[in-house]
Image 1 (tube, helix red, strand yellow):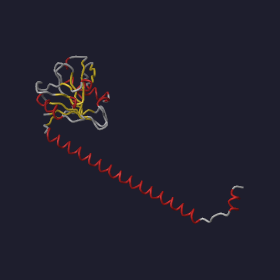
Image 2: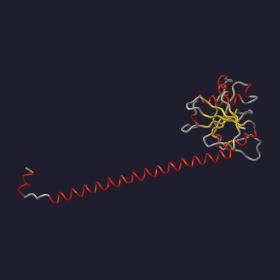
Image 3: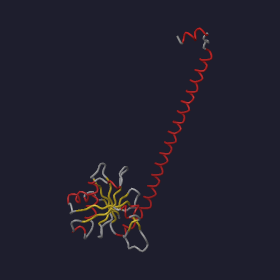
Image 4: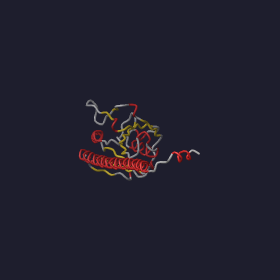
Length: 210
C-alpha cells in the first residue's frame, strides 16, 4: 500500500507519497517517476518520502515552503528522528538512487553524491504535520500498469508536439517560398518596366545632370 498526501504549500497543490513499509519502499525505488524527488532523514531510519514535481519545477530550486512540508513529513515518519531536534533531511532526484543486490531491503545509495542536497529541520512543526495527515489517502498501486500508462501518455504528448512542430515547419517553409516568389516577381516586373521605358535622348540625359 502507498500513502499519498497533498501539500498546499504551492499552487496548484502537489502530491507527496511514501511506502507503508520497507517492502513497499523497494517498489517505489524501482518505479519512481523521472520527476520524483526522494527525501529521507540523514543517518537515521525513516520513511522514503517522494515529491512528484509539477511541470516547470526543478529539484535544485524547490520552493522553501514545499521543501519544509517534505522535510516535516519525513521527520514525522521516523521513529527515532521524530523525537529529535536539529535533524538533517537529505533529498535527491529519484533517478539518482542506486540499488545493488547486496543491499538490505529499503536500503539505497546514490549514483552521484554531488546531486544530494540537505535541509536542516530544527524541530517538529505540528501544524504542518497535521495539515498533511488530514490529506492522507492509502491505496494499492499497480506500479507496472502505472508505469505503462505514464509512458503511453508521455509518448502521446511527444507525438502531438512533433506533429505540431512539423506543421509549423511546413507553414514556415510555405511562407518563405511565397516570399521568395513575390521577390522574384517584383524583380521581373521592374526589369520589364526598364525595358519598355522610352530611352532618353542625349539632350535629356544632359539636362538630368544640370
